[in-house]
Image (cartoon, rainbow, N blue to C red; front, side, top):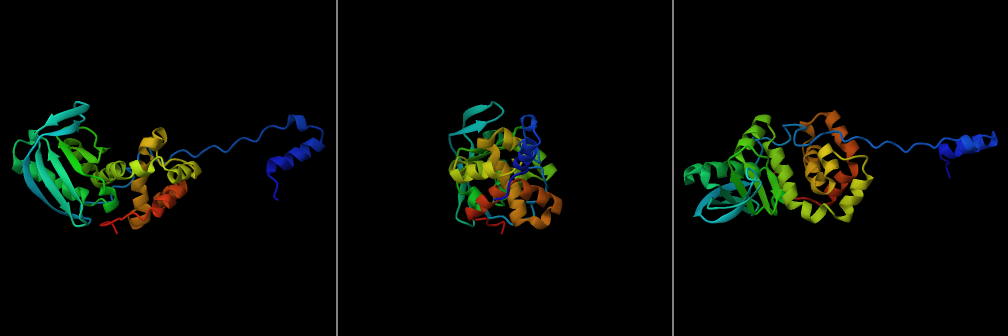
Amino acid sequence: MRRTLSSVLAVVLSSAGCGEDLLPVPEPVPMSPPFAGTIFIDPGIITDSDPTAYGSVTYSGQGERTMFDRRVDGWITANPFLFDATYDDGLAIEVQVNPEFLNPATAQTVAEYYAEAVGRIPTSLRLDVETMWIHKGLELFGGGNNNILIHVDQGDRYVADGILEETLLHEAAHTSLDGSYANSPGWLAAQASDPTFISDYARDFPAREDIAETIVPYLAVQYRPERISESLRLTITSAIPNRITFLNSLNLDMHPVN
């Protein structure tokens, strides 16, 4: 069996009569996360020219719904405009557009825009998305609760930065993957075995953000490697190889990405 360097040094120094002065060998310093957050790493991973699974939206009137609104940082009861969005993989989403958009025609334009963008997100990431809440406001998007939360003024900023679909992918991971995998033995083992977290955000909130922060770089290296630089690909694969292996093992349905 090959001996470690520290054991060899211990023998040498002990034989020299100075074993008591042997300094401990420090533990390796963990790698720092390579990114602050991952929706920003490359705006070309998913673009508005990519295929979408979106089919159509159909207006179904108005109805009372409970929605989360970040502008009040809480739940509201509203009477939104309701649309049934359908996708070519058989999935459907009820799009709930805040009545502040004033009329069905304006609300439908908003619903169609975001339903089409969400259609660029893989089937497995839309699987548990049952509703979309759409409000005005410059507030962050959100995921979970079988839902994707959208504030359109913030959405305009994401569009300007070229990261709308990357953001939707992140939020969809909260909705469709977190519940099944964030605390699963396989994911936790991958998390513990990898050299680092992919981002500061994932490191600071490992139970809540690690999967969502991982999904964008995962899609980039596994399905769109030609769209990112080789240095970015190596950065990602060096930081989270076991997480990538874990996600591969799920055999996610990536339509319409692949």
